[in-house]
Image (tube, rainbow, N blue to C red; front, top):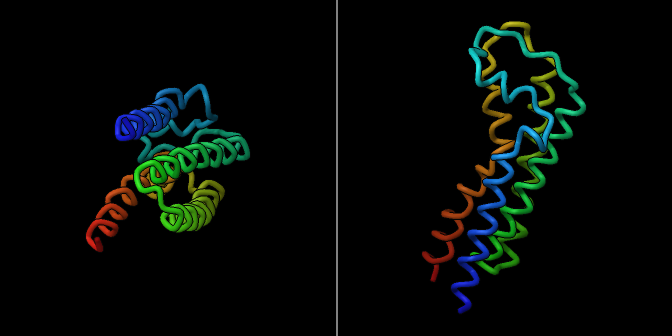
Length: 144
């Protein structure tokens, strides 16, 4: 029964991550969603409210982080893993958010926006979870 609840909880939390992605257009202000669907390599960045964009990106990162930490807790039930993950998420957010803001404010009119695309992608997607989950699993069960 306990294992069934754990699997059900994992499915619910993963579903929340999917819902964030599914309803990203209505939940968050992000004019770059459409921009990166077009031929953005030679186009200038669209006109945007940078404060609203940064707020939306930060909120999305926060939601993804909370759900990701809940998944890690559900899988490992280890405070040290959660503490380390929280530190890693905080450092990653600080570095990537500063880089994102710098790129937005200093972007050339028609430069290739590859760096912006990937920095933003790492901020809005729960990619760190996909790295941490197998890493902690390997570390925990290799040392057992």
